[in-house]
Length: 162
Image 1 (cartoon, rainbow, N blue to C red):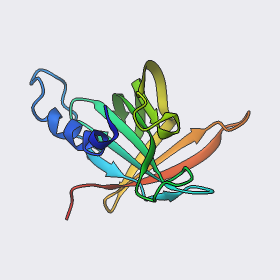
Image 2 (cartoon, helix red, strand yellow; image 1 turned 135 degrees about the horizontal axis):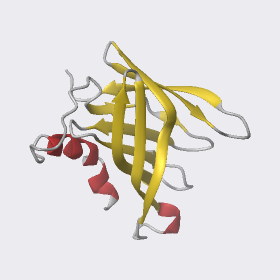
Image 3 (cartoon, rainbow, N blue to C red; image 1 turned 135 degrees about the vertical axis):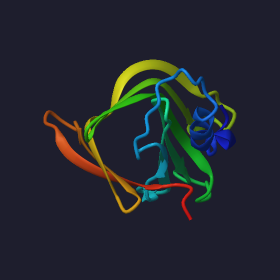
Image 4 (cartoon, rainbow, N blue to C red; image 1 turned 90 degrees about the vertical axis):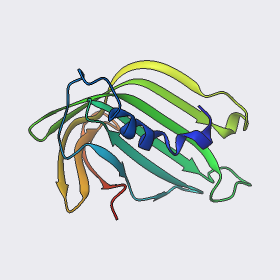
């Protein structure tokens, strides 16, 4: 998948769920839909935008795009991306997200370099709990930067609401 196609990937995944097999399990959770995190400044250069999408059929997509991180790139130039897809389950406020496919691309290896695709089985947002407050999805989970878990909270705003 080329970088230009990735921007709409989450929206298509969410919309595609409405056309999926009617025998698939349906999740009527308020988490269903597309979400975007605030843009993050990267150091020494660039920015990152992250998006999440949850379908009614229990599938999810996570997309992290980095822009302008390499010397000579403009702020709006896609530098790299990571796209994780898989499934999710909700039990009360617990959210278990399992990635089964990861696609990555980095312009460091050339603008026409191929993306790398791996089949994986990994928990995304480890031990996550969620809440939705005023159109904002809050994820509380753990990261493991060293030997001990570190509690982390991330927020995502629902896309598509006017």
